Amino acid sequence: MSIEKTVYILGAGFSSPAGGPPQDAILDGIWNLPDSPDIATHKISLKNFLQSVLNVDERKVSLEDIYTPIDRCLADGIALRGASEGELQQLRDSIGYLIAHAIKDRFSGSPPQSSDYVSAFAKYLVKLAAVRAEKAKDKTDASEAKKYDPFSIISLNWDILLDNALN
Image 1 (cartoon, rainbow, N blue to C red):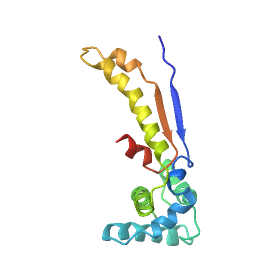
Image 2: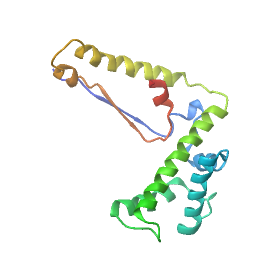
Image 3: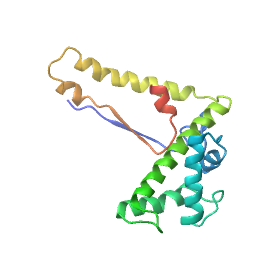
Image 4: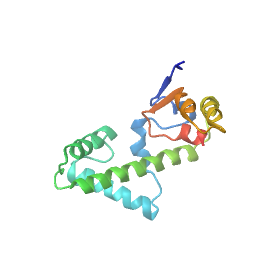
């Protein structure tokens, strides 16, 4: 007996009703982060890259315009205007770090909006996943439990709302 699988694709609109930033506000969120020593180091690295390598104003560029040349060069194994593959990977990691902090700051810095739907969705997913755990309980062979795989989640976001709710 096969079970149907549902694939949930979470796009930019998933966290907006709960106060999540739209993608075009994430960079502003990064530049507005408080300059702790760690954050400041990553912000300086990003700003220097944007000005010296991409030759763009850090306040007038989109995330796509930053990620596209970095990812293209990493995929092709080439440098970008003097920035080595290693430097590009470090920069990509720094951007991800800054994005996570900007999103976290957005959620902690504003009054919570309606996020009941996130909690309800997380509880629903946990209930479905619990069936798999129950099927594996006290079994020496987990093959029946492994066959039970009712959903997958593809997130096109950087936000952590669902992750936090599942945790």
